[in-house]
Image 1: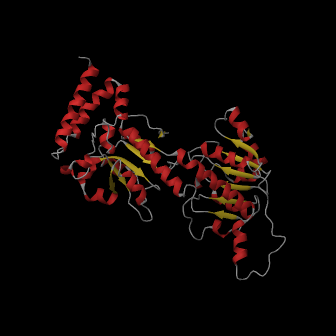
Image 2: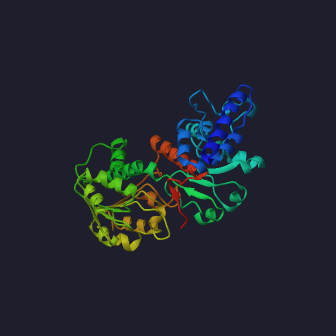
Image 3: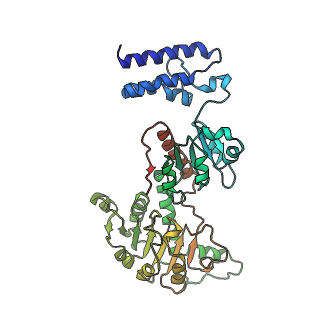
Length: 406
């Protein structure tokens, strides 16, 4: 009998036994898992067929039933209480810093969700945790935590930026890191456009004037500038930067961009973007400069006194990536001395700024509380993308969005 036929025989033998034992409240998931493993290695195409028929490992993990009412969900196994799912560590559930409760319900379909508090109260849980879901930069990943997780395989970060994670340290423990670049691109591009429009038309100032009890009239010389047909310089033309360009095209903006790698010609033509090999050329020509880069040692304080001096005195700086990309002391000086017209920031360093920080005292600055991805839809998609990455790693498959240590 061939290897493939042997594997099939073993699996179907176990399925028959499952039907017999299911009504007697027994569970042999581990046995089935052991039988299914050689099938995957022996014939991947047959394994895919088994998944589609919902009689494979996927079937009992999700609780789905295949033909013949073969339900392999351990929810059905009364003697187990809860199904055996890989443990995932989260900071907390709900509240100001925890994973939203609606997202936790989704996580529970795939994982045994364990909070930091539960983790520290029970050493038994240490070996059960195979993944960590980092939401809003929590929990803190340090050497002490990694040493307490002998079976940890992957850290799924919710969001694109991973500067809060020590990638080299994590990699030294044989643990992979993933992020969620696809889920955040639209919402972050939206906030970039919103900040540009708000700054150009002085919306925050205007709102204060319109609602102030001291306002008796609206001055005719209170003016903003137009975005339409202005020149936008995008520094960082990745997924988010490109979506900003798509939106800017609808405003008939002249689009310049600077990136480590030039985009394909057809991609440039789609958004009518012109590549600037030197960032200085972009700074000198742009009415609005938008920062959309990852924070790396190379981009730390990418925009400082020298770069700000190259910008037009009528230009606006918009930052939607990371606060440390800008030298904030230099930015304060440039704004106070009208080296540039204005700034619009969704990110600062630190967050939030100290209440007496000079940036908070300036009228030509708009600051929002890092809300680039703060939409119902984006947060949900980030969780879903993180789960997809984590499940791939736990299944020994390539992660769709793995972050390589620098």
